[in-house]
Image: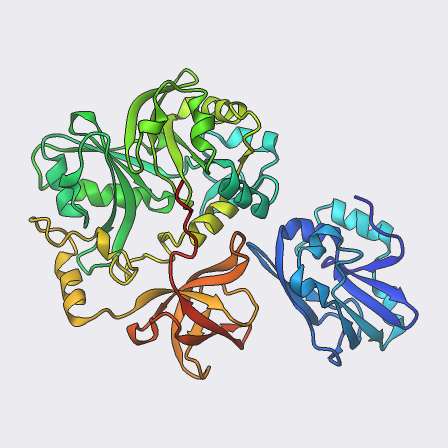
Length: 131
Length: 371
């Protein structure tokens, strides 16, 4: 599996796709593969202020419940309503159609703390730590 | 995974892509491809499991039936060679030691197929009781037996290709001994834990891998897939079959679990638990197992609290909850007070500290159509 170069990654297998002052959050291919068939995503509320490292969503597969930790701080400006009806988008296209929410970035300096694709690919290949 | 118990089929999981997990001390595959895909294969075609973690206890001798009548809540005297009977085995308080399939065999032998987590306790319990009977021996055969489950509408067609026994004559809850399957000596029962037609097939541990692979190879475009624990649970859950440790335990017996039809109060002999169960029946049940359907979307899970409609009072808890793949619903089985057990009763389920609306619905959630 190759991971997109334009994303920034967390050790806990979330990503941020940064577009201007906005970032789209989701879970990585590795995370969805570990979870298996995803059947429900608890989305954050639009307008919520999230700090980096806080739980911004909960993803549930048939067997497991997994909290998702915000890669960056910011205000939720959009959620992906499509995954209410098709939570399997997170399995099928985790880095694209399966995004979870978008935030307005409040502290751009936090981006530097995230992993780039090379670091994340290594992390995932080594078993990904504990998710 | 080194210190986990392994079934005789452990060595082939990798070949088929099994993802191994620790399932209460056993190294078993949770899935081969995907829980949803394997679940759908069983409903629409066929799926094959290694269920050798299950235990097998043989009870034989002239007093075998008397012992079983004493221990089991169901009427084992209705058995005859080739018949299979389901029964809970209770404690004196009416709670459950284990629930099991009893295969009535030729020569007055009974093969008890018990849950993996309870093998030692069941064996000790039965062995202790057997001391009060003259001519009965109890043997734990679990380590020497491999068991596979072939389930789904195409099961008979697949299995028939590699065995001579006329499977269309083997009725539900019946067994055939010494059936040659691909050259292997097996015991076949037409039983299962999925809500579909199918078979459970037993052989010597050393033949387990050959049996598993012979069945997979007998597929001729029938859609048979190897399947894991994940869908073993979602399938039995949709069919509303109880799982020991969740719906049944030391404190939740057959009556509260809705298994009253298996409690043979009138069988004419005393059985362990009968006094307590009779009292429950007469005084009213302390709780009842019900089905719940989420009205507000979220996933109910084992152990979550059930609240009344106002969301203020805790009234029960979920024994098993899951997304139900065939029904595309979020469902649960839960213990609630009898007064909250009527179909249509509105309740709340507490999920991550938020109450979500749910409603009592009929069980089983899923029932296969008649052929």
